[in-house]
Length: 80
Image 1 (cartoon, rainbow, N blue to C red):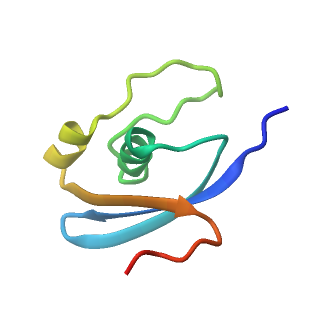
Image 2 (tube, rainbow, N blue to C red; image 1 turned 180 degrees about the vertical axis):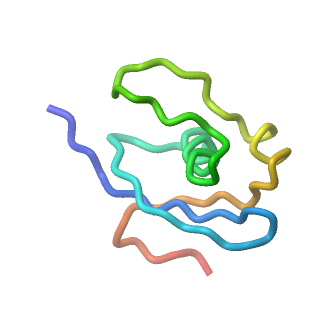
């Protein structure tokens, strides 16, 4: 049975700090860049959990002004 975790993704959009919480089974750097682009209104959020979509890559996200994407599990302290 899947055990989703809460993650906090911090990033900057055109130099302005942004942050949000997301529930996923697992998260890595590539996924964090994609979800940051979704939060910024660039990426596509799948309508169904198993729907296959083209993910936004780091270079593409950077073209739209997204930088400094970091993530951590909820409850973990942010890196200073």
